[in-house]
Image 1 (tube, rainbow over the protein chains, first blue to last red):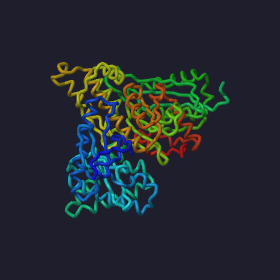
Image 2 (cartoon, rainbow over the protein chains, first blue to last red):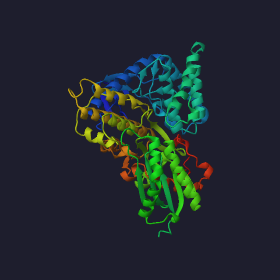
Image 3 (cartoon, helix red, strand yellow):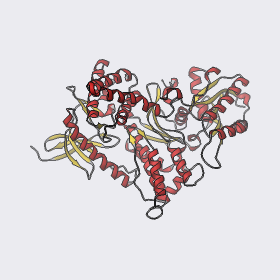
Image 4 (cartoon, helix red, strand yellow):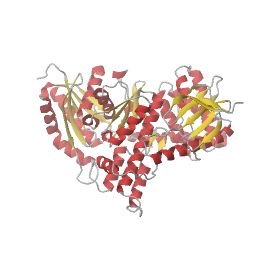
Length: 224
Length: 337
């Protein structure tokens, strides 16, 4: 076993963080570095980066226990706002949306629905569910990533907002598949709730419409 | 005069501006005239705005025509802002447009105000397919063209940014519009006080930030450990950092290569600086719509009207009813598909 930490190459420059591939004691890893953003004031920048790094690391470690696939955390460097985590081989769901047939997509979305339901039942809010934050591995495992906006909450409202944001992303980025994929997602989400939890689950889903009508430029007759 | 060119007269009247623009079918601008309602005290009162528009519309049209050096008879198409906005304002624009269209027997086209902001930016900055950050007193929207529409990737969940800045300035006793004054005061301070930073996915919320900033001014520490400039600076820094982050998220998600900054708040140099920074980071081209065309104006309505007219022809009078609540992502964009 090699005892080296090697940061090899930049693989992705996201909005929030730069991802480097490399080796960490012989393991293939991703270095997720929340780089300083010079556009904002230094104090604000530091606060945001530290808070989100800790949030994400804690979430990843916690969620690992809920039989949901998330990258294993190896090292946390809060001072430099960096997390070292296992490298997940696979493709982003966003890129796969153009390649897969609808049956496959529905199958994936149903599983994603189940995953999100498990998170919600355990009081975990992802905060930024998008098709860019879901990775499908070659052997069809689904990984949830990017927990920087993660939060703990048991409120129906927060869970609905989580689903609402995902719905918005599907409409804006994958309008063609939105209906069938989102329905499959909700199907999986419902299935994960047993009978005693179904009332709460339906409340969450129903509340998405309430959130939508609260938005800007909603016609009077559509308001609830 | 310019009889060889087909001309469109665009009427903007969604809020406090009654704007008239004269533009030809190739996108050359001949006349721009704005009549802007400025409150003596308080905010924008829809009924008072309506009254001013009603008093001044004729004059504004005449001035625009004389700037373009043409007569009303040279106009071939009327475009007006049909949605979204304040009902009383929209009504005046629609009534004037219908009247001119029927009087001159020329076609009429209704235009969505938000789409017009994007289209005039594309024309003026010579930009093809941008991610647009549209920030004004009435709107805060991050949008880009995707599958036949201008999709909204992020937007404010409560107050628009310009509205928030103006309201805060008004609470401090500054006159309308407060945005430019806030920018000036903020420049005097380097002190940052922590304020609520609310980003949900790609959506924003400013109401908590507004309240927290107000509390700073009301606190007993005010003018002891910090002064007005510090509060204003912190408010502006927090709000703009939120906008920039959301824009960057949308940019990374859509992988667009161009970013367009438009709307009244686009005039703010600090915001420009911040958005430009992330554009450099992502190798995207950055453009700010020229101030004259970034705020509400008639030219953008005229030009967007032309784009729609070229593909679909004019609207029937029965279709020109105003839609104060229409979202930009509900409208198809035939000229880009």
